[in-house]
Length: 227
Image (cartoon, rainbow, N blue to C red; front, side, top):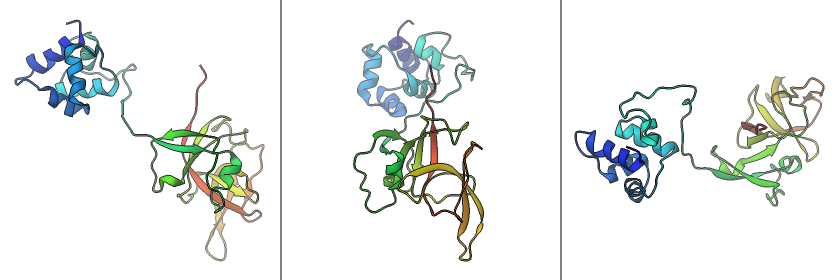
């Protein structure tokens, strides 16, 4: 069986005790019936990614055989160095990418979100989608864990916890990215804390000595790797 259509028909009509209908396969894979019709007719010659995995699982056949014809339909699926990921289909949301001045103004009433640096997408939702934005790491104060050009997803609706990474404002409108470390409590029971750089060549900022406002908590760290 050299084509996807032949293998699919075999898996739907010959292998199972009862023939499987196209609408049943469409429902299991999460596609519309015309997509299954295209596979069965040969109009679509390939089935890839999550659709292939879902179809093979529903039809109880080997995904490599179904997609390429290599092996047998009854071969056991094995996890190997070449098959150690899961394909997922997660909806993405558009969020603004801010520079550090815009990020510093995020919690101020007069910042209206006009003219972000650009936009990016994330599947992170949080409790308040409107409080999620992205910034790009500048400088080496947080190296080696965070390097210039790394992208961060920030949730301004979250309160910081000891050990987390935060975007904070120190006096001026410009923001800074540091590790949050609790040092004690003031007379009103409020946390006293430090903003700690991971690079020891940079100074630590203390809430005792500086007026620091926590803008948001980092929830995602994204890095592009050189090719």
